[in-house]
Image (cartoon, rainbow, N blue to C red):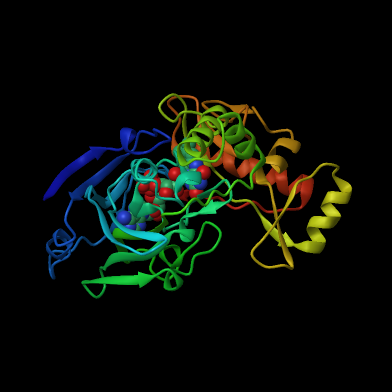
Length: 337
Ligand SMILES: Cc1cc2nc3c(=O)[nH]c(=O)nc-3n(C[C@H](O)[C@H](O)[C@H](O)COP(=O)(O)OP(=O)(O)OC[C@H]3O[C@@H](n4cnc5c(N)ncnc54)[C@H](O)[C@@H]3O)c2cc1C
């Protein structure tokens, strides 16, 4: 079914809760609806996909059409000896899918518990947390190509997943609407407890069962991250910078206790943007209606009534201060519209 809203407020459709509007929002729940929405002569001129709005900062009214998938199907496709394949519609809440897996003893999604947003958005930035990434369990991504007006499928490899990155942020940006994702999940016990906090909390709960891991991850996230319904935010505002190994080592020598993590390439290292912001003296900073969260410096927050422009002014200030202190550029992870 297709539902259209004209001149619609966005306040409740973005986790920063900024008060912008969209000229038009079109909701659809079946992939065939996209053939109609993008039929020749009928296709919207300017459009973008809006999932749950948990990774978007609106800095102005959106004067085009926001396409919003609402399909909620989860279907078990087939089981191998040690795995199960599951097809999930783009409109399913990511965490509902994780819960669904945990209830069925399917392994692989549990470390990604409580990440806000839709399943359709998960491949876009290859969501990740606590040593796991969506790419570890994604088998295929089904999408509508608005240029070719065709329904197509990409394999995991073809999605070109990287750290908070994929083909949907590159070549297929502004072209692909993800309609469903196929996942391969484990049917045998395979916990991944590389992150200290998770390991400890799982042990306190009695060991590495799926339920204990999910509970531990949810509990850690709830302690560390502000609740978007209370304090508008989009989670990590900046990406962790990836730098040459030599740069990381020299910075670590100058700054005692600076954490460094491995990156995909052995000649590179990942730095913790939150640590850099904290050590630049910005944790808890408040600038009018916006601020840097006082428990997690990577998170910028709307204390109430802020515009997207005010959040961006703070973001630029944070970037400048980190550059001044460490000589490191931190890029935004959030999509700025
Ligand atoms: C409190 C909080 C904590 C967070 N923690 C994490 C975390 O631990 N790890 C992490 O990786 N992220 C985290 N995030 C970011 C966010 O949860 C993810 O980016 C999530 O995937 C956003 O989903 P969404 O449906 O809200 O997408 P949106 O914010 O609506 O969209 C994000 C981008 O994806 C595109 N998009 C959305 N749906 C589709 C689709 N069906 N087809 C094509 N493009 C689409 C949009 O056009 C946009 O470019 C956090 C956010 C918050 C608010």
